[in-house]
Amino acid sequence: MTIRKGFASDNNSGIHPAILKAIEAANQGHVTGYGNDPYTEKAVELFKERFGDNTEVFFVFNGTGANVLGLSTVTQSYHSIICAETAHIQEDECGAVEKFTGCKLIPVEPVQGKVTPEAVLPHLKGFEFEHHSQPRVISISQVTEMGTVYQPNEIIALADLAHKHNMFLHMDGARLSNAAVALNLDFRAFTRDCGVDVLSFGGTKNGMLSGEAVLFFNPELTKYTKYIRKQSMQLYSKMRFVGAQFQAYFKDDLWKQNASHSNRMAQLLESEVAKIPEIKITHPVEANGVFAIVPPRIVEPLKEQFYFYMWDEARSEVRWMTSFDTTEDEIHDFVKLIKQLLKNE
Image (cartoon, rainbow, N blue to C red; front, side, top):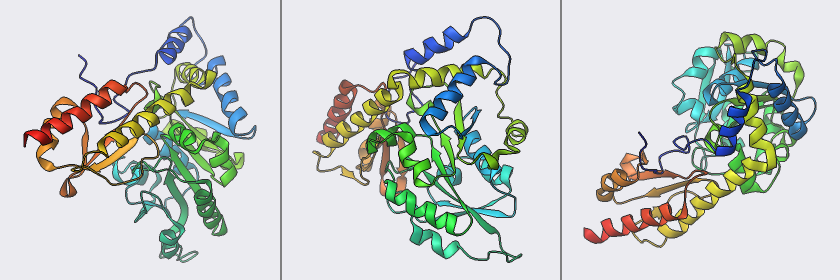
């Protein structure tokens, strides 16, 4: 059973046909499991082409697994991880990072979804003091949970701050492709080249079925990563199907086509609802998310036709996400319904 497309999440979209075909094509005969296959090897090569030959690549099942593996590799249980109070690892991963790393998460107030050096600085204390958790990682999301995009100079500032204190910068890149399109930069230019140490590279929100990648830009960090991946239940036995997806994802810049479309649909949605006086856009629309304050009386009737999530019920703030398969007609139908509901009141 399928439901009418809405604006709840880019996770709700299906699989891009080219990726589905790649999975089917890989479903021939037998290959060695657990990543010792030509599909996985080719996918690793593709990542190295984009991020550098000395990049270490580990495939996992999902985004939470990617964040857990990346952070587990560079921490011990007495460490702390500084992140935005809205971060996915803080709000939406059911304490997975705390459980598997044993680390203390220190949430800070973001500015338009972004962690700033000014917010981090007060927590850079207690180094070598045995009664205090030891700050070890600054974790940021690109795109942020508020739909905003870090500029390269903002990432460099956080990386410099982290490295000055012998810490690491981790990036949760669940929507990294949307950020690349928004910045008009290749992946490396705003990750590795800006000082990111560990990157969770997501594709599921941009047309893939499953499977994410964890990238380490210092191979010396990964001596025990393969054991951590196995122990944390993220070693995919039939890994060829993840490798095949990433091959299709990078071929002919499919990732860019998908992300460009979803970003463009968000911009269209923003431009149309901005014409409605009763709607207030609350954050810059820089990728594929639109946040807005909506009259409470129309929320439920809207959700019945086009499902979406309430972000902040106290403010009647909603989140509308667009996907690679969102159409202009759906945007216009949605805006038309908003106008009808407001007119009928």
